[in-house]
Image (cartoon, rainbow, N blue to C red; front, top):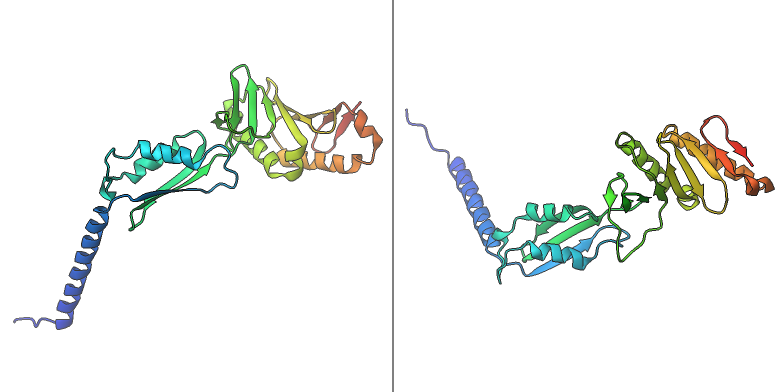
Length: 241
């Protein structure tokens, strides 16, 4: 028995075939277009470590050395990987438009501390990874003296983020000393005392204790005579002259 051909099915197959043909034609036509312009957008709020010129230089150095560069010649993933290897870049996205514009969006890393020890000086980002110093900008961040134990890297990064994200702590804490046992001592702005923070545990609780201490001690003239503020004990703040 011969099955009748449904005209609607034939029409549907024809429409789908036409759609694929048009998509293939549009894709081939798009790939044949040339790069007419490179547009760089810096997504970070404070772009002190990278500039549009720096990003453009990386991009152009990794483009085919032709007078006319077609979209089909571009390796967008490779361009992103080249940008992401830059020590000042946190993330990048590279894409093209049908008008031949190559768009580059870049977020820079954020320095939240500066290490100074026998191995040299460098910044730390919010993951406690190294960032080189910059000739064009000096970040106002706490100075870290000592070496970070690899086992403590994550919790130390958490400590730095906590300080950086708190308006009071970011202004108050100027220096961080890492002892051999990985306990921490802070120096602060406006007062001569040192803060014995102890080991990197109960971080939020210790900082809450310190902020409460400053809140109540500001009206006490004795605060200017303290030499040491001990936060090792989470249930109390111990001060000595």
